[in-house]
Image 1 (cartoon, rainbow, N blue to C red):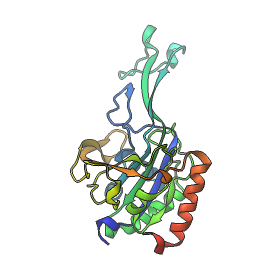
Image 2: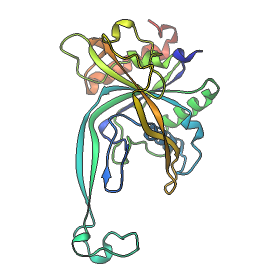
Image 3: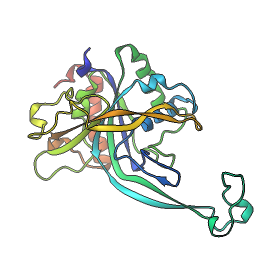
Image 4: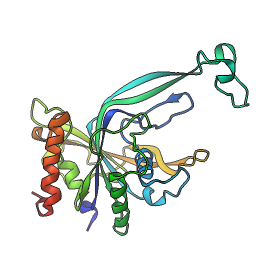
Length: 278
């Protein structure tokens, strides 16, 4: 099995709110415009029941390719902590003292992606197929509840869609959770930690002059090395992008319309693997 026909899992990350911290610092909590490697690997670790600080080397070897069904819109929320409380109940400072006067109320800004939906292909090296099996089992019955970047962002609908022998083929062709475009095809963005010229897409789906995704478009600092609360560490990794023009009939709307189309697709292709390349 070569790189373009890799087995893997398909995940659906959809919910009213998502937040994938990229450069969050103290009272300013941002979000990337797509699920980060650290966020998704953290979700998998939680489903597997791994505590913070546990070994994640095996999960860090998984490759992620993201399809942005609905990119969502940015929502910035203001939070306050400590206001209106007695002095002894206010927020403690780094020196162990209590705040007083106008400093008792702390303001934080938190940014979310609202109404976003993503489909993710998880692939492993040929020798790591057992990891995919354990991950699929954990996602079907998670040890701890999964969330989309923050605990306040639970997923809606099914999280694990299934395991496929040619997962990238189905990532391109799976029904898209977005309104049907009024005129012809519509452009959908793919993002990955590996080159995207390997995507099994017909030539006609690439917009004229579009990049093939064979070279990185930049770097993101979201490769987790350790999730320990006091020793969190990340490193940079390349980010590859590619846009494809996908047909209008692949866009199956929102809510139950999309879920019914998704279920029909999965019934056909999960139960009849010989039809995978139709």
